Length: 164
Image (cartoon, rainbow, N blue to C red; front, side, top):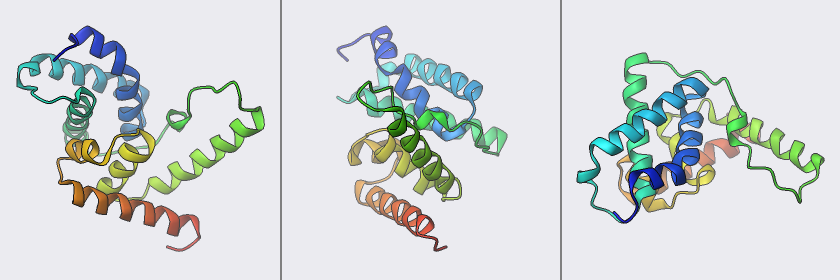
């Protein structure tokens, strides 16, 4: 590993936080899970042998989230602002409002998706992980990940079109 853990923390903290917030929808739980993620990364850094630190951290974060919800058994959506992109000075306030409305609509459509479909859409479409990286995070093979992503997107399109 070329970077030390402090540099990795500074680089990926916000992405890991947004990912965990998108999964748990609770600011305080997401903060706790970020800390758990980096604690696990510190404890198991000697087991890391890959080139992509980001994918490995997302895997650790995903596993920390799963462990947390196995203990607590319930997910409640509370915040939706985690999908909002960082401010872009070229966008007008109307553009920002339209984007916020679209994000709210997609979040509400994601709410009822099966967990694997929701994770696939979040990892690839919202957090920008490649097919391979997202498949590693979810611990599935890449062709299976593509199927999960397709089904998640298809369900969103159906619901957005008014079908159920």
